Length: 287
Image 1 (cartoon, rainbow, N blue to C red):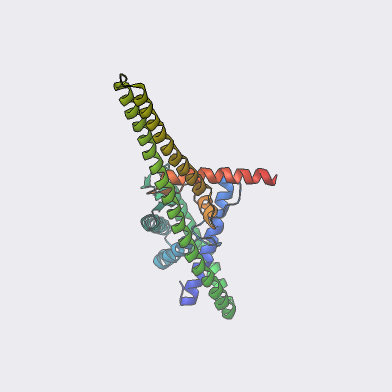
Image 2 (image 1 turned 90 degrees about the vertical axis):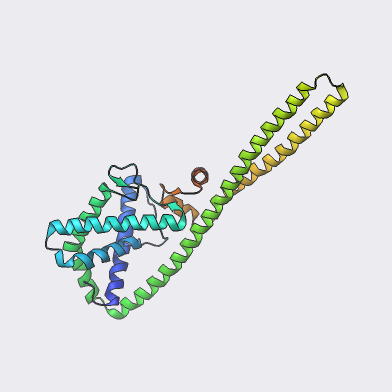
């Protein structure tokens, strides 16, 4: 059990970094390549640090009972993962991970498979790993430890701020793409309705004098050309938005390949496809 704020922070930092290493290793085995996993940019996943602290605080008195240790780890980490996913979705309007394809999941935030893995992992940490980590913390020079924590936590705070700004920028970006898509749909309907109405008018008045028919047809053509020009302008604007790149965008979409937007998911998928094409094109140029 951590006895001081210093030990508390050291445990958080160590397990946040170990959690990031675990995520990267899992992604490497699953995808066969390195992916900087995690909500933040740095080599740490805060949810792991928080999760281990909760398990240590709640289950240290019970760690000698293996069944209770596993069940408690299973339950506590599942609740933490569910709450984290739910809060992130409500705050940022994005569902960062989705376990809906796994059996025995709860709203896609947690599933039996990973909850069991978290339970086993925390049991291993409590019985084997944490005594070694805690021993390391107590023998490590405190002056160097305080210096490391100061640097780490400062970088962590900046990273949090940068990530939040990136997410807000991504959401504004998606909103712009979605609004243009909506305008394109409306304009397509208007062009179709305009063609139908004016052609119908000409057909109904086919007995009219030739000059008057020409005038109507000319008006129809002019109206269609004007709307087509607006349509082409919107298509160009949409293409520009999809091709826009900003710092942090690519890493965020790669880190959460299953991320869904609760408001602009269609635009998010378009942006993801555009990014794939961009990465593929960049690789071809490098080769």
